[in-house]
Image 1 (tube, one colour):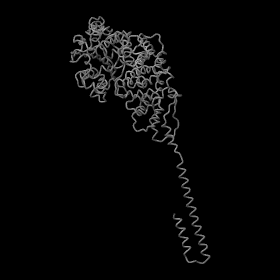
Image 2 (cartoon, rainbow, N blue to C red):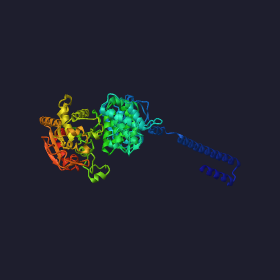
Image 3 (cartoon, helix red, strand yellow):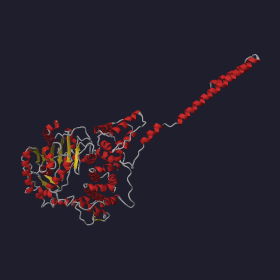
Image 4 (cartoon, rainbow, N blue to C red):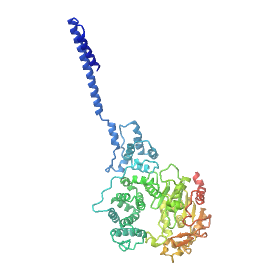
Length: 624
């Protein structure tokens, strides 16, 4: 603009000024024209150069941005084994920004030969809160199996560390989940099985082939087998058949070679599909978790379980506020974690605390053994009232807890490992889950003893907490352990026992089995509780002498109120004289048999006296 104005002024001056001498005017005009033309050419050249450079810069791609976008991409690599990746150093030279060095350094540290360095790297990853989304995804795609499981067992780890499960394979044409579940079960070996596995397998296979039978009289016809399962009546047949198949698979998964067959035949993907279809059915999901937990006992299957996408599902489950869901997931993840867990948790053995990796040293074990018709979780819930029954599960466990050992005891004594055990019991063979199962106290005690030793029970001081028939199992387990050299550590480290209404001298329960329909065909467990049982008397005499010799600390509680069993029986299940072991304190409490192990609240006498006994008995061990 300034050049154009200058040219106009010059032209006007040339047109209006007095004509100078002819020679001077000519050369002056030439010089002005040259100045004007040169300035115009120079300015135009500079302008064009600037525009060209600006255009070039705007068209130049930032390769770093492109690389970052690539890193954000979600990739599944099916061709590389996790086992091979663990031994391959993927870090050489890489061009990255300074602020991203931490991600790659932590990844490298997580693959160090130094175990302490690996654990520290996982802890630092889990505690990170400031990373971008793509940085979490870098870890998710580049970490090895050890690191992934470590993050899954870290309490505060971000869910973005875990890739979603890969797409499941399509079902075969004209097939269904029920049919594929049946085919998976049929593919497993059917010989050399115990009676219960044979029972569940044959039941599932026969019922699945007749699941479309007509409904008669409001009940589903299951081939005329006369099922003893009242809970199956009125349900959709396919859902019932799926439950039968899962029950059978739970039993099969206790056999290592059968786990290999389940994995080889696509069982992990099929179970995942079933898990997603039954999000509103906790019973189905728990059985699937039991199968997965059993398969995780086999270390050679770990990489396959991880690749199938189960880890992200387990992480969501372990963070659940539902104690059963979280505990089943915690068991599976603990069996997958060979970096920090040497123990193996078999079916029915659940760690209530700690369920995550922790820096808190564990100095003692407290074991909870339920009784007749009990369970690993519901037996140890807070005592119910009308308000509790109508409330949904709350995150605030100070108001109500569905498992006080996990909610209360773990907070009061964080240095304890708290384990709860589950096993099947029934009042009547008519209600038994497996009619072929006739397990005596002696048989069950050996079975539980083996499982608990595999879980490392005996490696540190132990306190046993038992309710009803569970106390008889504890007595039998300790007597059996005293006869086996490989179990001697359990005896040497047992510090004390708490008995909640344990019928040391028998119960009136079996006496009602003759005339009461509810107890028709009493189970073997009920028969063994009768007052005239020779086995019960021998157990009491042998254990009393043994406990005195070992100087076990003992605390016993007993109910003073009768219990309603069904709608017809009102019974004082364990009278005062039967709950008296002969050593230790015996404390009567004004509750019934079911509520003797369920404190009303945290400051209730039942819980506070239990807590005091545990602290006093383990005082020296917890101080060290």
